[in-house]
Length: 114
Image (cartoon, rainbow, N blue to C red):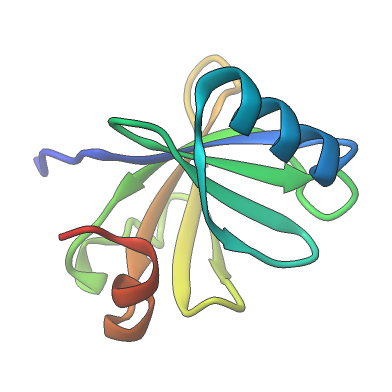
C-alpha cells in the first residue's frame, strides 16, 4: 500500500474573490495560482484550493501520487484537468471525496515545492 501525503484541501465557494480576500486576510495565505474557476493558496504547511461551486461538484482532499501508474483509475472517476494534472475521485465509505492527483513535470514546476 502506498503512503501518500496530502496535496491540497479543496473547498467549494460561491465567490472566488471574496474567498481569496478572506483567506489571505484571515490566515495570511499566499495566492500561488489563479484562474477563472480555481485559486490555489498556500498556508504554512499545505495548500487550499478555492474552487468555484458552479464548476466543481464536491469538496475533497487531494492526495499526491508521484507515479501516474499509481493512480487508482479502476476505483473512481478519472479527470484530466486543464492545468496538466490528472485526478481520480473516489468516495470514502461515508460519502466524502478523495482525489488522488498526479502532476506532469510542467505542472509540478507550477504547483509543487519539491
